[in-house]
Image 1: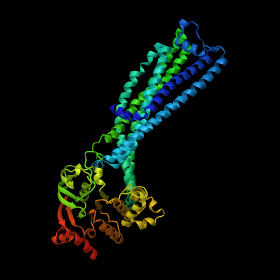
Image 2: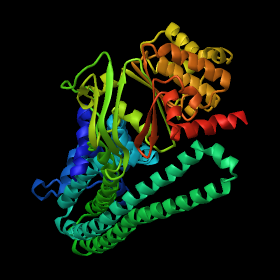
Image 3: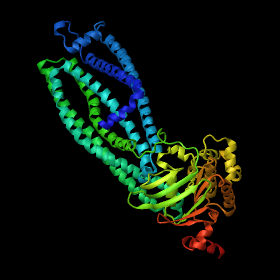
Image 4: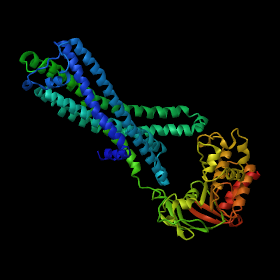
Length: 605
């Protein structure tokens, strides 16, 4: 229950609405009980000679007292008049009952939807602040499933439990008290159902919780297939892999069907079992109560009718209370996944007052840096390099040799395993993360763009930028011309991940986004790989003009883009095995020279 109480902490901002819900719940219970009493009285008046009110005060039963209070000022022997009064009373009581029911649910709905929105906001905020290491270890489908599916289950759980843990116990207490007052002996028989139903509920609930957790995980697995398929649909079609993809989806969907069906089977098993126990109790009470009326005369027909009216009215809230435990356990399974995210400590702290704010850059240095994602296999090993302001540094080597990881460490995306990275002799760990990254721009090899307009994608590099600055950045990136040929120009929506434009166009928008920031350090990770020769030349000219005041770190496979670099670092298996200018490395006649000959020899053939 600890986890459930943690969920309830989110209810504090909505305590007024919850209070309104609780007050209207009480009023609903009272008016609901009143409407049931009137129905019982209506039945009694039809089945007997009106509603009989005993005038002997000392001999008044509970039903007599209530009847005297409700009907003493009308002629209970006039059936027509009595029926008219009961009909009007029934309409009034049902009107207020349903009015309170509506306000109860609408106020609770506002609170629960607000709570769920707050939880989703908190999770999304957490996602923004978690380290990249966390995202490397988790599937995007799992994280999506938690914020949508699991939080959605919490909404249902909160609604069911708040309603059923407050409203239904009130109903049961109200009806049970009425039953005790109508006939104490008959009510004692009802106690049989409590230990039996409680035992069944506890047994089923533990199994429901386990199955709910498996169902949530299976939902994430299915979502992963959908996301991967939609993201990579071009490749799926190119390799005619649709049938295989359908097979994978059908298999995982069937697994989800099985898990959900087993979960629902347990949930729905609770109700019929309790129903049958209730029917058994009802039959016993019918037999005993009938004898009290017909044989012993210890119970009036009016009391007998009202007893059974309230008894069967009590069964519905009692069953809902029994099902609360199952709902809570399903919600707790989802809540555990939610709080696993919220409690995660792999955080990046952006507003730490103890960290150093920087507003310039003169020197970047790697000192004996080694790094591993899994704390076992080094991706980088013993890296030592000094980079000065205005340097043009090129990183070359085979894929997986550590080039991108090198640039990621400059942005402080990961914590070092060994060594030190300094910026103007300040340990990068001691620099405020936002302050550091505001001095650096990145163009990644994936050219990640958002489902938004070209204008807003470029503006992402500098939220404060005006139109003139955005246009200027697009010109430097050789994007201005193709953008203005589009129907909506800069207001053109490029679709999810930029699917509505070409690879080269995506790259140029990504470069414009980086340039607009006017960074001290510009990292280009395969930034010109999708450009034609003419566009590449224009991008190269833009890079050359920036390099006088901006430190360039360029990751490239095409050596034509890095020949003007001050230093070329050749990576192999996480180590820098060659270092120097283009001419120096050619003279060295080692790996770089072989790569150069391979590329330019192929071009000259």
